[in-house]
Length: 212
Length: 212
Image (cartoon, rainbow over all chains, first blue to last red; front, side, top):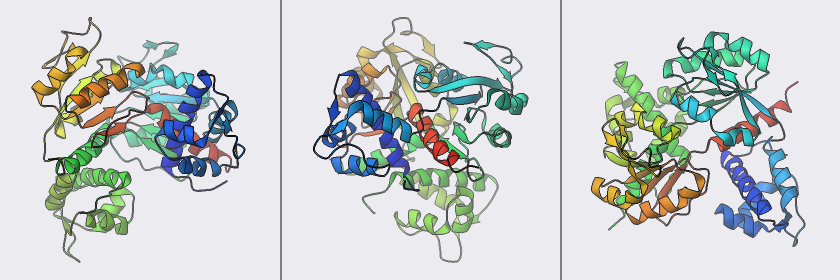
């Protein structure tokens, strides 16, 4: 198995999984790399290259079996595992994430929610009671959580991340617009809405200068 | 100016901007590519390569002037322009985005909010009144909006995007977990939390298999 898989390959694998699920629901039994490429807005060569990094799959000329390839991609992405997530920061973004049904459907469970605000602590969200952020290490241990969702104010992001990492967290989905410093073996995905808008701003500015 | 700038270069430019602002607030006058690299967790060669794609800047051996480089990066990113944004979908994510002060601070103004829910239409959010989604084309024309934030249910995403594009929108920040089909010259940034978690799942699975 290749050691260095690009972030864009991983993103495409997620896309392929969505598409395979759609084809499965539609009753398709096999799928060519051309079908998958068209639905994913990429090329058949790219699809074959992405998948070949994780072993050979599908028979030449027969296409891919839909349920088999779906399981294969799920396995590549580590989705056979039920991930246990602690959410720190029970503000609007935190609430939106907690209620996001797609997480649970996809095997990502938010098993605990923590906040620093005394007015929020003790509040019930679904089957979870909001706990004080200073119990983070205990909560991570109790829940055997592996991932952290961080939707806290900027200045709290690094200290909370540090505590979580010490308590055994290896993956962080970070909504605070700060660049977290983490040791090797800990992975961070940043969701920064301003940066997404800045990327659009960049594209639109360059494209506008070419428009009539 | 190079025609093909990678998404990761644009992302780093956004990071550089954050860092330049921090240095400016701290009163720094000049900054070396090494300083910028260290703060951005990259290499000085990468910094120089990223910036050199947009003309020469800074004097060899003198470092970059902080305010000048900041303005230069803002200009590269198209941030001298005040972007006008229409938000469709006044659910939890929409509300969190609307209240996100960083947008306005950075020159991104949400000038209108639309929803399909009759109970939400007419509601006041700050200085904006929620309008019916079927007035989208009129609202875009009235507000001279250039960007769309889409936080609607999956099945509504493509139809709303189509209408917005017909009405003149060129950039979409898409929160619906569907791959939008857009014509050339229209840019989409997808924010897909499940895909971010899947990327973490991928990293953690591979790393766990190497952990003792």
